[in-house]
Image 1 (tube, rainbow, N blue to C red):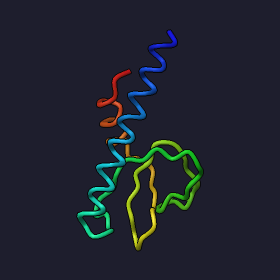
Image 2 (cartoon, rainbow, N blue to C red):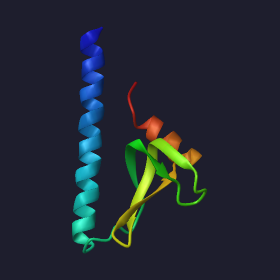
Image 3 (cartoon, rainbow, N blue to C red):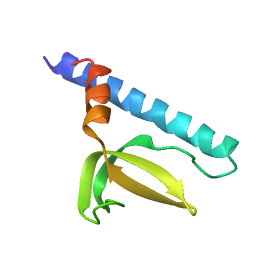
Image 4 (cartoon, helix red, strand yellow):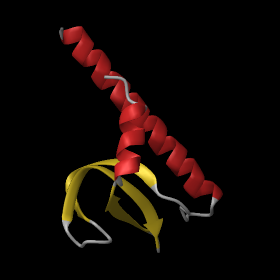
Length: 87
């Protein structure tokens, strides 16, 4: 049981790092500006750009004026994320 939990956690960490590397490469190619929203897992509280409410967890993030802005994932994005994830 412990091995399955560790394996799942390691897999989640790997995919999170892979998404981060992809996002960083896109930022580099675009000259420091990210032109589209990307997935992020936020552990600290951040402010939603649309509702100005605090959010944590699975969010979408992009760079605006050199700073990260965050928003909640839409229902469609949540479904796509869950469909691509193996439980």
